[in-house]
Length: 402
Image 1 (cartoon, rainbow, N blue to C red):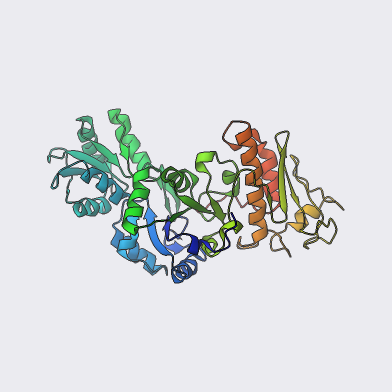
Image 2 (cartoon, rainbow, N blue to C red):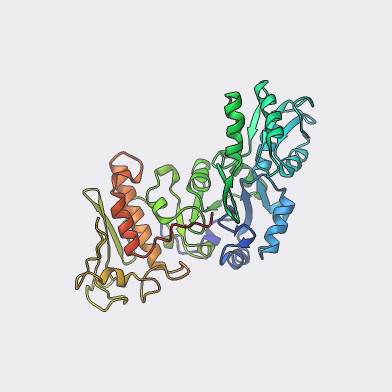
């Protein structure tokens, strides 16, 4: 690309997902508040974009401010707002809409001069459904009666789970399934990855060159690709490095970073593309369906002690054993967490070496999958992929934040 300016200068607005990117439950993601303060100081505007329709923007902004992220209500964009706009474009002002959801939907409908109602007998002309912890059988039953009668049905999103401090809980997609099963009908979906969500965010933020920032391939990145926008995947939430390596084209981000500090880095340090398999000191190659990853210092040296920039070249095959020029342990030692030079990701995942290795692996695996015409990482032995990432110390424990 040849882009040396940071992402904060390349894009005018960051369209930020919330869960797993800015916060997890009641707590900020590490480094997020300071990284966003620095992004604002650099001139980048922020929009906080969430598929969660349960809370109105004012409450989301309060929560963000409480965890150290300055946010105004007009910077928050919810799937409830995207759904309300879809309905307002189809219905006359003052139309009644049955709400299967909570306060976030009711506020969004009123903002569009629509009238929320709670029963199928209240004269609704459409149904809107969004997540709320208050949704129970009576509300689902009212929605089912109305949808079964043939009324237009809009769902804010179909995420199957919602993150909580205790783990994953049923999300709006699970609740949508209840009405879908009972009626045999399909809703129009407003939230990510469908285009209405990012259209809403771009309209409200007045973005001309937006950057979508998220932790999920199947909502944030897929939605950005569908909208024709660039995206930054951060590895602080749902997606882990192995998920990224195995991503088909529609789920591949423009950039990958450890966390929101990536906003201050140049595009060239974060870009990930099929065919770009030599990144920094790392070189990945797929041969016979097997991935091999080697670390080659810039001076081409194959000598030097473990953990140094001059560590021996290492390769990882199906067995996952490091095979350095001077011994079996050289690769692992040279790529160790927090190692000197261009080593691994480090304790907080911020080291550039680990990210370079991941980018090289993506470049090689994606190119091999595309050449095979499969559009996924399935043409490359997954055991060799995990072995290579493990040896480069860029995988993480299987336990996820949600």
